[in-house]
Image (cartoon, rainbow over all chains, first blue to last red; front, side):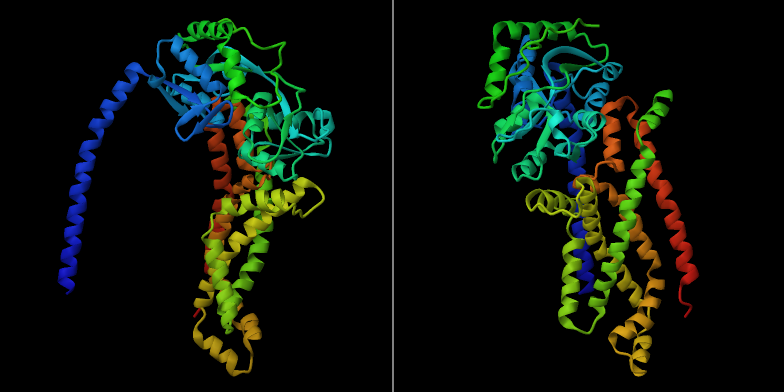
Length: 280
Length: 225
């Protein structure tokens, strides 16, 4: 009895080895071909996957304003939509993804700042946002001055959270991993307001499943969304030309309107649509 | 290098570690109390208490800590409006301690039970023979020996607790280490590796002495048989 059991075990082990040998041999070949093709005639674009209205993954379909701008720019650069490979670019990873050439461009609510310019290049800006507040529709909060002693939610470690901590110390700031958590807690009334860039808030309000929210419309910072590029990239001036063309043709305005349908939100009209900066 | 040093001035890294130490100490005390009660329940002669203790351990030991802490924020605070203090941040800090304590109590219970197993059965029989009932026997005879046998596994739970205290970020404890690290990376991803190593080193500095101390104490205090 014992002998047959060992025999069966040995058989199973041998079979497993044979199987794994097959797997090991097959993979590198197919993998090699795949990446070879991808590098030749496709473009890898980094976007957010979790921001409704800007960059959002709806079961493999990518939607949002960033996505639409990216599609237009890629089109101007000679890539059709099915040549675009969408890659998730979370805020903290963006500089590294560019430095390691994991993506060619990043359209992910990526503010142009001097610190970031030291490691990456930017084209654009293609939109100018500002930090704002999202509040329940019946709230009387009209700006950051009204927040004293109120509960405010933002994303852990984000620029918006830091700004509040520095400039409005009287606010009770709660930090959560994502804006979805903030909005769901605000729907139940435990949080009075959510803060981040106005266009992100508008996207959240447009897609909130419960509760009725409004964007206050009193921005207290200026975030210039640019296209992140690898340092020394030659694409900058072509991308700027594409952005200018998109604004001129009206496709820019159309994209904005389509993605933020049904929300009472107007982007700051003094600053938008923006003129792209000169390339380095 | 200069970039990196300026970062340490700008961000309160030590303060962040202090928050984690506070979380660990408070949660450790509560987990030890609750865990001891649970261990008593599991070794008691009353079947329903045994069942309750086992059920607690199996439920909380098998639930991810992130879920417990996220429930503390989204469920207890967010939906039910549960608070443990007037001030919002103090309240969230205490809810995080509660979550950490509830989770680690399950591990403390099992560590103490392993300590109880090091006490020979004869000790319990002798205690009953001189007329002690369950509670006095546990308090005077079993638990003192069990704790001395459980120092090493309790030390392991403490080490896990220190590192798990960073999960308190899920419960919105704002200035603890993983949050500060995230903030530093958001603004200064040009020095991302030094930032990682700083925090890793910080935890190594916290954890190694505990490991050494518990190893030493478990040898020193072991019951010679």
